[in-house]
Image (cartoon, rainbow, N blue to C red):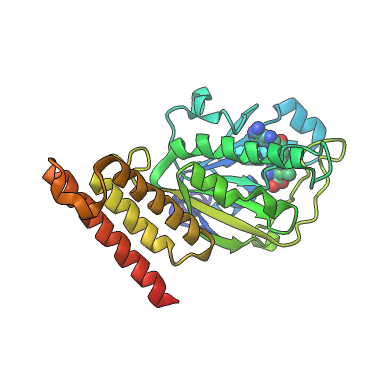
Length: 300
Ligand SMILES: C[S@@+](CC[C@H](N)C(=O)[O-])C[C@H]1O[C@@H](n2cnc3c(N)ncnc32)[C@H](O)[C@@H]1O
């Protein structure tokens, strides 16, 4: 009987299981957890947490003091095989010893927030939130598997939309692949927390919120060779379908072309240059750009 039960549990653990965007076959890093109820929600769905590294900025002692369910949630996660790390700053996490050589398929930060220091619409607080998100992106981007994704769940109503997290992501060479409605009922066990101040164990009103999913631009560390530029253009063309960043794409491609022209001369006097190969690449680049613009015009 006991053997049957054990083998049934083993089979269940081996089966791939999904909860919303997350699979038991993903290596998942969670950052900025409150009472660890979101991590637990994933672990319960997977019947295991061996693929989960869950982290908090708070120390273990602070968590136990601040959140009534933290001790129980952490014990449960540990039992299911999670790796639990405390005192992890999302803006410096890539140098944290355990995380230095790790790569993940999903890196999740739900409702990043720098603290209730001023009114939410105060420009100084907004820039603190943006610095936090930017620091998180810069660290998370080097901890992703090639096809990995960074997920941020975030409120989309004012003043939260003024954080402009898609722009922050673009500045970190990350592009938006999807922006899905976030519904708390998709994650049984999850209790969203304010996360700081004397009411840190209380929930905050979620209102309209979304899960923003970002990926790395291919070869985003270097755009030196024309091959990389073409890859970038291809990605750009896919992104054109996406209204939110279409204009940003044109701006980047446009400024790149201007830079190319500044260095090698305009594509119309291509024959005057000595480096034929480089210039023919530039002509191809220009052609591709014009093709892109035509498509845009045709789309109206
Ligand atoms: C609004 S709470 C959200 C908590 C939790 N993610 C949730 O969804 O319930 C914001 C969280 O960000 C964490 N945080 C703030 N600054 C951080 C940093 N530099 N690194 C990691 N976490 C941070 C806080 O400790 C807090 O847990």
